[in-house]
Length: 80
Image (cartoon, rainbow, N blue to C red):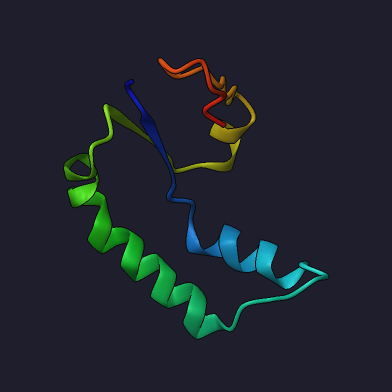
């Protein structure tokens, strides 16, 4: 069954701003920077992970248009 990878490669300022307003728990600045670096390093290798396709979101306004549809696998089980 084809699987599409969704990558949220949003600007650092967006991630940092959203992190600041989190009420449950925030991440240290170093953690955000580390996660951003890990994302950049892993992007070229994602297709090797078996995804049929990958869609990368680079701007917040792109997220407003996203619709995620779940499907049922060949065994009739819910995939999501």
